[in-house]
Image (cartoon, rainbow over all chains, first blue to last red; front, side, top):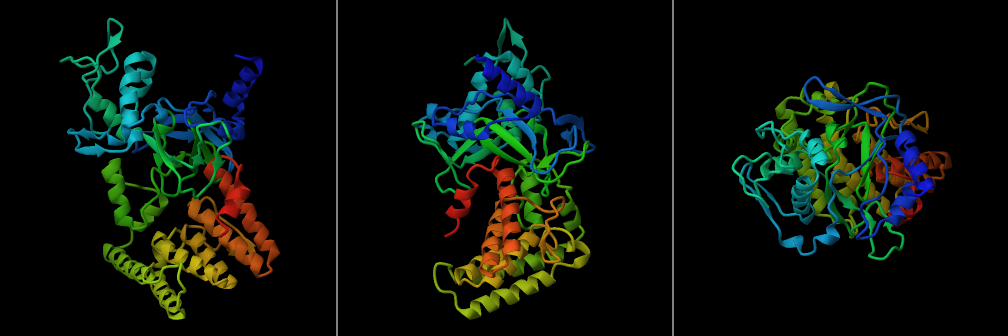
Length: 150
Length: 293
């Protein structure tokens, strides 16, 4: 990584200074994963009274200021999912049906990525799953391989 | 893929988390396959749905009158403050833009995310009796039916204006002051948008300005004009594209009325809002011009 890139990543992470214009201009149909740092310093995680966890302002944030800038844990590159228009996910647990190519690519991409990346797995399974009943052992591995019931 | 009886994680769990935490957005940057600069346009018709999981942002709770607005560049989410946020305040954003009708709105929240909204708007509207909610909804349906009879690409007869203005005044009267004095009146938004754009098409500047300010009021910015100055209370109003559009209409109409100072104030607020909604101010001039006709 170049020195100036490192500097830029540090000022993104520490000060929330991003060159959004350049980021926007660097996007193309098959370049959607941008190489940037997260800016999370203005937010802090706390429990709320009735709504589970929430994010709170870690300092005074003025109108228009950046609260948060975050790279996705997973964001499918849709140019790699050509022909996905036909896919439908039926979920017999909660009777939902997903027809959007972006959403089914997200689901399949997650399954694949969680299988390959145990660090990510931990972060992902901390997220709220509503009324879905968990075993509490999600993301554990056997011989270094996570087990998926797909 | 592996089949196993003692699954350590279930694809159903992955799906449950996706449904609960996933974000999606319509890319308003028209991406070409080459590296030519994509254009950002706020009301673009060529949009592609993108979806992803953002772990930190997933922890944000919903409020209809949120203090943050999100935007995206590829896999990067940008969250900006829509008003000044004191330290320790809970950060909120809109999971989806709130349905105008109170009951329809609660159905969306309980159906998709299993929560009951307790934001300032929903808490206040809960105080209004359900008979009143139904009465307002009925009247607004009637306004919509009247408006659809007069598409805006055709000449709208004067009686249609009078009709809709009369019905709107009636609907306004159904919003009891004890509940609605200082909160959004979302059911009135669409009738006021109809009147604003219809008067604008007739180049009636004073009516356009009047109803554009009404749109802004109906999103919760009560008394947007004070002592001849634009004065938006961002703590109590909903920041979204409709308010941005209303500011544009007001800006243009005040220009037509020769009220240069107000025109400038509208432009300043519109520019700031554009930056908050889209992530940065890049493309503001094109958005203003692009929506101008």
